[in-house]
Length: 206
Image (cartoon, rainbow, N blue to C red; front, side, top):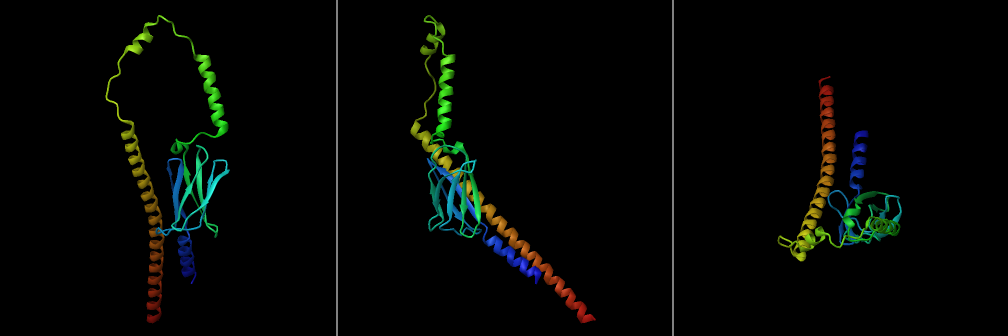
């Protein structure tokens, strides 16, 4: 009975394990909330928090478990998904993925002031008769320029493929964990059955 109760509690815990996947799409963060096996979770609360724990954006997952967050600036973030029964899941977003967004106001102001001071300290007027300046200006550029539109298109395709691979890997991990739990349950129940069979044979002989 104790083994059966433990097995039932393990199945229940596995069924309520929560997963969240998120990726950057331009200046937005999009993702989905789901359970082992791929079942989507609607109406989950989604929070976007800074490394200090400050919440900067919130939303809820839709009927398909999908959500979209609008971060106000570029930073490392944690996407936190929560259900009404207290289960949580986390996904990390790095600042490098949000290159289209500006830095936080305090950081951007500090960096701009530091940059302007460095420029004023290091800037010196170049001699008018410098031959190096003429050689740089007169040197023709070589090579074939790649059209900017084609480069952006290739980068977007590569990004979409990377996001797809990350999503498939996350699904594989969650599915593998579920198979491990079910396999462990089957192993335990099989050993229990063999033990009961041996005990029954001993009773019959006695």
